[in-house]
Image (cartoon, rainbow, N blue to C red; front, side, top):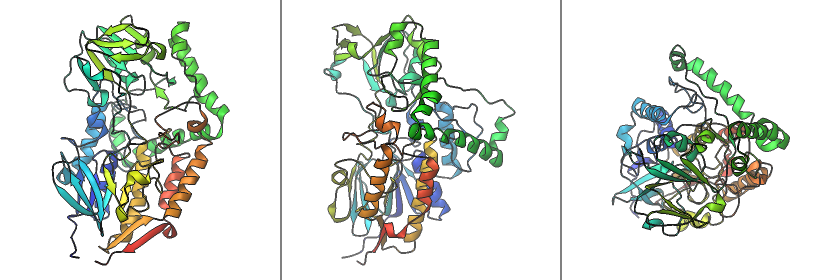
Amino acid sequence: MKKIEPMYSTIIIGTGFGGLSAAINLKKLHINDFVMLERRSFCGGTWRQNRYPGAAVDVPSPLYSFENEPYPWSRLYAKQAELEAYTLHLIDKHELNEKILLNSEVLESRWVNDHWRLTLSNGNVLTARTVINATGPLSTPVVPNFQGKDTFSGLSFHCNDWPKDLSIKGKKVAIVGSGASAIQIIPAIVEEVDELHVFQRTPHWILPRIDFSFAKWVKPLLTNKWLYGALKWSIYVHHELRVLAFKYSKALLKVLAQIPAIRHLKKQIKDDTLRNTLTPNFMIGCKRILMSNTYYPALQKHKVTLHNKDNGIQAINEHGILTNQGEQVDVDLIVYATGFDAADSMISYSVIGRNNIALKDQWRDYPRAYLGTSIPNFPNFFVVTGPNTGIGHTSAIFVIESQIRYINICLEKIKNNPHLSIEPTEYAEDEYTKMVHSEMTKTVWHYGGCQSWYQNASGKVIAMFPGFSFTFRKLCKRFKSAHHLLKEHNL
């Protein structure tokens, strides 16, 4: 068979922080023959896509940044515009614009003999030795299929697709959801709208948000590599201690998180009935812990109506929402702040590996991967923010950079032989997965008494890593040859 020369050494799918980290590190390895595919008409991922009012990071800005990439943040918790600026700064600094192909959605990635063949929605076909999937775990929005959803005559959309220059002044708005996005949107728009209806399925635990602007004299110091590093690592250590509560001590979790959350709720909500509606019936940490000083006050505005599960959505009609209690709520706009499919739709396109094995079939029970990154039967294929790599207590970027360390080692193994592929053995992946889910039983994400987006349809916690992030990094740095299959393809 005639050898088909790959067009690229590596194809990166996605241009968010995962894709950018992969690209920057490829350049450090002196691998420059790569391309980045972006399905949208613009690059940059989460913080260029999520433009909804109030959008901001929930991790301190210095921690939510790349290693050796200091930035003069204006405040402790950066808002969307500044996060977008940081993203573009990285792209410009590392000259990645020339590597990005926009409007290039992947429909299929197929292993053919010794390389990957990618079919795009625009009809193009690209080939590469290696694929790094960096589409991100929060890239597939979920909108419940409410009865009559498509009959609504007004404007409706997922908050991930907030229309540019949308005016909500004087409008009657329904927010469906009360999670991380909703608690940022609601305070940001409450003063502009005429009416605001919030449909809450389950309440979340909320802690105060301790945020502040950095003084002018501090901002220049944040560009100093050493000072920035010291600040970043001090924040990291403080956040890492939270694992002791999430995994090792229910009492500590209660003292450090649940009691302060109850105190915050009682302080801001004086009405007993409303406070009961906003009190979760599960242990704090089971779902994502939210932070806000403005959400509870916003809900108590005279123009806001909170609909709980008992008075939730029965159906949607032309004029708005019909509740379970038969109340018709007429609105001009419906915003779905209903989250993402972070477990079962981790990779949205078709992936066909060695011997025509489909990834969706291999993941039929639940997504699983060695170090959450590489998969048996899928040579030279790596997943950034893959199964069980989420982190509930610190920055996702730390985990991404840990995965990239492992990917770099794998790429070095095959770099000088164009016919060589690498993948984990089935035994290694199986043992790793057993370890992860065994450790998961010790965490609040497993025993906390809630159903969350951390879990997939099987009930297993797929999104989170059950331990310290430095433990995960240690696993990624200690490459074990016995856990991998190196195969030379002689065509």
